[in-house]
Amino acid sequence: MKTLKSIIIIMFMAFVMSPAVEAQKNDIYINPNTGNDQNPGSQEQPLKTLNEAAIRVNQSNGTGAITIYLSEGIYGLAATVTFHPANWHFSEDQRLTIRATELPDDEDWNPGKMPVIISTMPLDFKPNGRQDPLGGASYGIQIETSYVTIQGLRVLGTPVHERPKEGMVRRNYPIVREGRNLDDLRITQCLFVGDELVIPNHLGILASGQGIVVDHCVFYRCKDAVVYWFSDKPAERCEMHHNLMIDNYGAAVWSWTVADDFKFYNNVVSNNNVFWEVGRDENRTYFLSNSIVVGYNSLVNKGGGAFGYGEPADPKRLKYGNDVIIKKEGSLQIERDPTKRNFLHLLPGTLGSDMGAGLFTK
Image 1 (cartoon, rainbow, N blue to C red):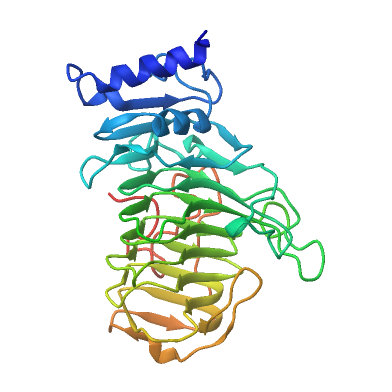
Image 2 (tube, rainbow, N blue to C red):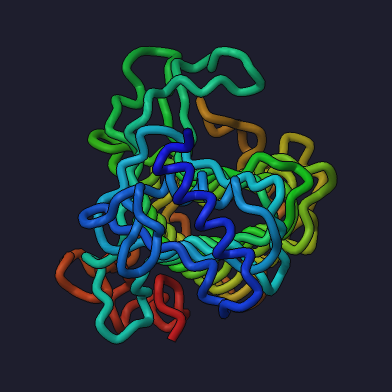
């Protein structure tokens, strides 16, 4: 006898396959306060968890866009949320979108309305089937399909003691893509926040494959911001633009596998330990334009990993346009009042505030 949950999933799949309904047929709504995972996932009867939305996407058959709307609230991830549909296929203009119901450019938006993602699962992930050598790791949201957008989320770390003893680094990776042959992942208008002592956000984005674009995001007091990880070939069509990276105790950019066509522009980096990490072989050069880097201990390093930051690299691996400002000493001024719409953004009229870096695109 089929369970109620299985019947609902079958009904959902039949519904999204119907050619008679409009594009909204594939919308899934989640509300952690009022939702129920036995619901159909409509706006009137939302789901409760992101895990349930992933299950329904992964079990679907067909093609076309699917949009998952996250209402304001706290999304505690007790297990990795993996999107890996075997029989549903996306395309560049028919994407999987995981987004906040309200976005920063909306008129009534404020920072308190951002859905909050926090990982609470055990740190028992086993990379490549082996025990983690540094004491334990976990993934938050794992994307294993092409053509995906993640938009408008507030992403925290995990409430653990990151360095409980010498040689140990316990850590969570909030957004991950492992597939080396996957393409087109965009992460936009997301706020990554951490605290080294209370809720360390070890690394905002760890992504492999091609076409990785990170734009209009804020990384505040994380360890590392973005790692372009592994790829079957040098990762082409990757970009970072209009991002703020403030007070991070690791590195802002890890370009381990990105190709020379990497676009880095309109980014503002302030008070990061290391600005840029290149691959150990130092075989690529990257061009930066219209960006500001103020306050750092090391400009360019090579190698490194979860435990450390490698060693100094050839600074000529980075080339700068005339509109790039690099200053080893100093810091930038940001809005620290959490009631303000521009919370954790550069104060108007101060250095870098005219570059459009941050959550807003308008």
